[in-house]
Length: 77
Image 1 (cartoon, rainbow, N blue to C red):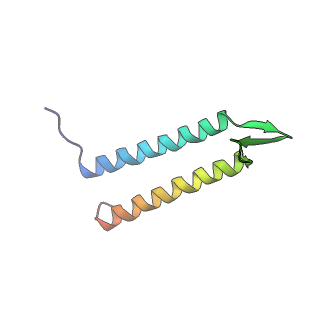
Image 2: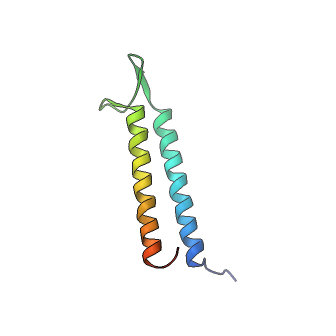
């Protein structure tokens, strides 16, 4: 018989999945960045690789803060 995850186990799993998503996102953005005039860019908007990685890091941090807030709100932390 399969037993369901406890609330804490499920939260941990979700956090780990989210972290893996952002690791993959950073890898993909880095992998397909292109060089122009000695600077690495992503896409066609003129955003540098550094700016894109900083934006991804900020987004990940914001999501982790929201999860921490919810965990504290519901007494899971």
